[in-house]
Length: 509
Image (cartoon, rainbow, N blue to C red; front, side, top):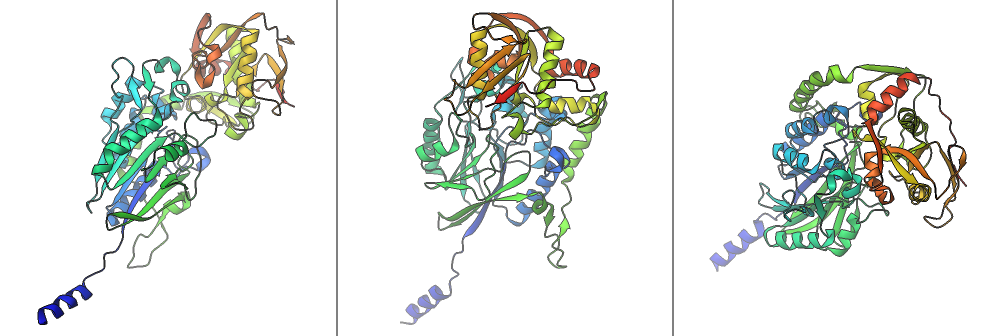
């Protein structure tokens, strides 16, 4: 009786297990925005991100930082090193894992594998394979064991659009297996050994995409969290499909994503997603004893140290003065990916000027930053045109050119990187008409477009290799290859600093 009473008392006073908090911080589509001054000072800055996350990890070791790609390419200080400078910075920052996005292939798949080997964290994607031997390009997954014993199974997915949204000239060696089927395989392999399943996906939720993260969530149940990228979508509290929480931050380090999971008795009790903006990340509880709750966060010293070395090495190249211009030219994606833009006119005019072609076309996704009024440096130019594409002239029939113009406006009113900026061409289009039947009244060099005629058209190797879906422009006869886009533009703008160009080339009916 006495023993039974003692046993009952022990049971009554035993501590009740409380839920453990597991946190995933996440970033996506940084496009090498590293500084607090980037993107009109909207970017948080990698040093501040690292400081915030690493401080948080000290109070809660059950914390991981994932990145969903389009990270190793974008800004001049990174592109100059073909991505290696970004690897150095991410290593210093303490990233735990990333999945490559389409732009992480811009230096070639071979270069991506080289960079992955230099990373102190796993770079994973499960659906990308070499054609030659069928082997995976990179490791497919990673299991993290937290200090509380919880095992997190993480696998990566990269958009199949990489085949034409990275430079297609590099993509012929790769194949992308069925995204949903690969996801199912990864879930099946990880589930027996893991408590929580996470997919880091560079798929996005744009309706125009081949396969979306939402499609994976619907067709491949068993993923607890998808850390997403690619569509540059801000999801303030995430979206839930079935049992899967999808989180995405937008882009350019405007926000830090935070997924919080309450885990108890070997099951997920709750999960939520939120976005921390620049102000929220910069302010932390610095001293609980003194009640100092509003002190600005000190940037991470390791990241700052690495940045100083990189900036010192790059300074002489990037600070070279190119010219001075009287007004700013916007590259706002909501404008330039839906309509004619002044910077697009200037760029395509530079193609015609340098090549003598009948006309020029360029995808708006090539133009990645504003060109500010005043002194223009080489660093500015490289920020605007970060991809290093080559200007080419190829022979294009009028009929094929018309198809290209139709493809340009097919997704309106959605923003599309394939929306064309043009020179030597004018046309109208009616978005109320069916796709590929919208373009009217096309002129080239002031005369109506002749479907049977053949024209010399200047564009980029990216487009002539079928980039952004321009398959109709692949394998056309090459007339001549010229310099890289930034070199052509620099020569032109030095002689046209007053920004002389004719606006009103594309008219929406």
